[in-house]
Image (cartoon, rainbow, N blue to C red; front, side):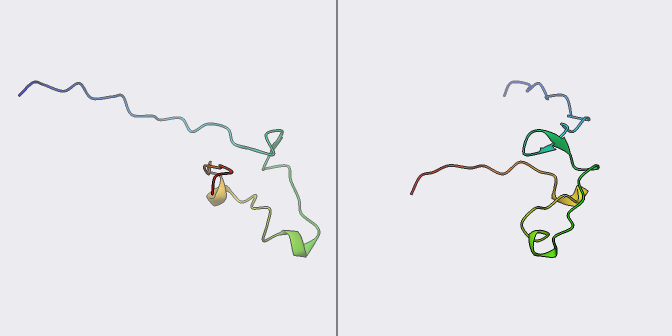
Length: 54
């Protein structure tokens, strides 16, 4: 077997912005009905795949 080179670990997480424009630290949601649909807490900061396929 050949030796495999290991990839360096990613230490920095990318800066994820709300709608690609705003940092989630500055966003305040005053309408309680939107809080379930706009997740701005740090634990929700992740990229989700999106496609329009069926």
